[in-house]
Length: 451
Ligand SMILES: Nc1nc2c(ncn2[C@@H]2O[C@H](COP(=O)(O)OP(=O)(O)O)[C@@H](O)[C@H]2O)c(=O)[nH]1
Ligand SMILES: [Mg+2]
Image (cartoon, rainbow, N blue to C red; front, side):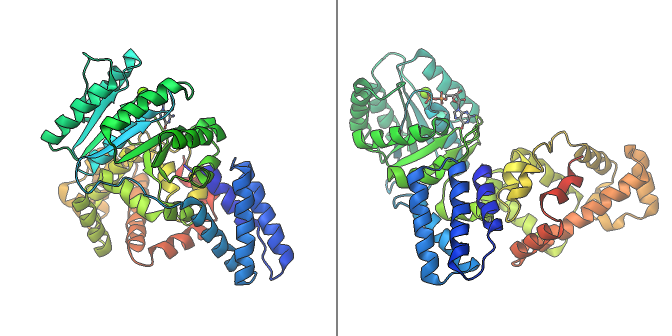
């Protein structure tokens, strides 16, 4: 996610050879403008952004740092339109959310993703099937909610979404749900009938917030429709779906300021875990190649439970990270989805995510080797890699069918991984990581990992 956008930004920033004169500022902003337009950011937004960056840079005094500061401030101002961020719970549960959007925009899928996201946060979620336009719609929601084990409220006896919503809210009150997500019907385009239905549903649902699901593949059209929805029924947040497609990402940059409603989440895949909170500060960091540490921690925390993560960090700090932990980490990473999306969140690593495009952790030859090797180790050896003397290594090599050279190589890698992990877990972690990336010579340096 944000790969194209981040690349355009970082390449523009890299190209800037900044001396203290106005000419170089013009060159820098021209470079930036090119990159933004290439990423499909709305022309007007680009114009305003460039104007603002110039103004702010000049106010600070021209120079590279001033330029970067100005860029950061401007980006933040564009993304931060006021309003809420991520998911916001109402003071009194349940928090009721109305999901709206055109047909095919990804409403139903996104409703499932949000439910899953909230379930990870230990919230009791009720999904309401209020799209009664298409027969298949309820069935689709049935499958999605069964899959993520979230309760669905449906009523096949009626064709009127108002009845379903009314009954659902009553049910949610008695069963003490934290959140109610109402999936509504969409149309291929905005028409009177759709708006009439939404108005009626809105009236009975009295939602805390109305989310509009915008299909990023429709580019600037998705922005236009969001504006219409805002004018006609009022929306409090936008969720941009299908961000994994061939979208160049520019829509995400301009959307909040164009619609004047905050972008809250981004969906980037068909799977339930493919949903990310959109927090301007984090996104600015990521765009400028500084990484998104909080996002990474959150993504990890969803999979590894908090206690386990804490223990792991403690172990790493003390240098007690052993083979069992190592395997556990590998398994967790597998669950986290592609390495690529994770790499993009690590400071300075965004450029490297491309090098890892085809790195398939699950079927990785190396991971298989490591697993084989660990399975030939005694429990004691797994917990304390220091025990591994030559005769033990020989025994392990025989046991797992690897050569002793291979065993040595893996052990060395493990040792390095432990050292690295220890380093990055400290306060200086970010800086060290950046240095390491520089030492490795950028993206190409990781090729050894690919095999
Ligand atoms: N690749 C991708 N596909 C998505 C995403 N969100 C939804 N889809 C797909 O888009 C299609 C329409 O989604 P659906 O939720 O049924 O849209 P609705 O008509 O608005 O409810 C389905 O095939 C989804 O799998 C996404 O973030 N990425
Ligand atoms: Mg639907």
